Image (tube, rainbow, N blue to C red; front, side):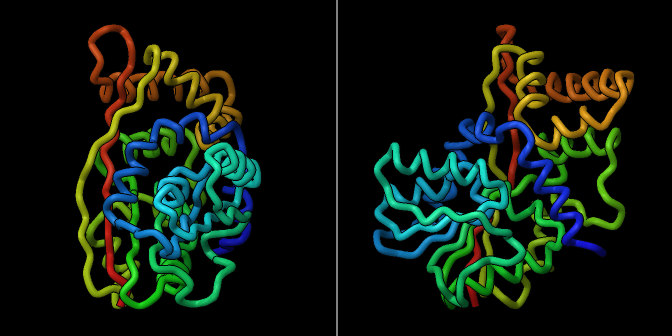
Length: 266
């Protein structure tokens, strides 16, 4: 498996659009994850695949010593701007979750929200999370599950634009068995909870347009299809969004189910 080539293509995909347009609706998830791992002031926290910095900023507000990495430079710059606006100190860097630029046991808490799960070499990424977390430290993860909005969304897109052959689906991180395989003897305990959050849009059509414009995987999928294929993909996404829409007033309130995990480093 040529993970480097896959990672390069994936990086270009996530750099398309502006993920922050969607990430800003995930602040509830970020704060909840931060509460679950409960870093205290002065503790060292790493946010892996941090995007525009949601979880890193939540930890920084607690006066933690925080670093965040992502392989999309524009998102790292957005995270830096947000930190400056909030007058908090965070060491944001451009880096790959599969090769973290930190020594062993550098952090008390390592977190990743809908991030590390997309690394093509899942075993390598999991090993990096464990490597940089000290003994007795905490790992906090938020992952899409195979069932629910996230799993259904990526499966819908994959029917029209299949992923590279042989790549393990990211939703493996959203299963108890997958987490056991990936983290295995590197942890002493693990607790996972199934949770929900909501995304708010003016309408289902507006939600589709936001995803198509700003969410890299969706934008790239549409760009790879001919007009008939684009029409079919939009039809399937619309059906999915209507299925998960909880609003009854003509707007869209999309319910997303995810797995929140806290593990203790062995």
